[in-house]
Image (cartoon, rainbow, N blue to C red; front, side, top):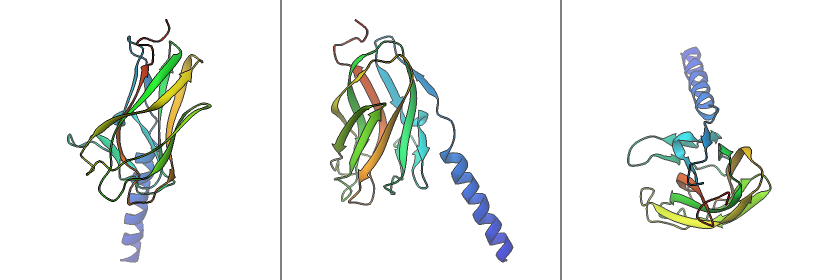
Length: 168
């Protein structure tokens, strides 16, 4: 009995590790200069965080550990200044998580407001970043402080050219 429980635990741990270490897809910059980083293309790093594929979710969720984080790889063809817009939700009692979004040396910090539930989505512009180096980049979102049950559910990060079209 003990051996079967041990093997089941090891198998479960292997599945969790495999799920959380899949290589991320490199997302291309769109013709309009935007970069759309959807939850389904993210790499998750941690023990509880994961992609939730259900149509009503389609999000990075189960973000209950402060040390868990998420990243996306993308290819920048046209540098510029970008508005950073997140599609996110946060359940009752979980608001107030402080997090950092970064690309290279560019960093933004924000505090996640409560949206009423983990399926009540909001689009929020949290600031601007300037990306000057063309080529492959990595965007990360890492919690700094998590006062409630979860950090947030994160459906997408979209980088939109601040001037309408990047590379002008």
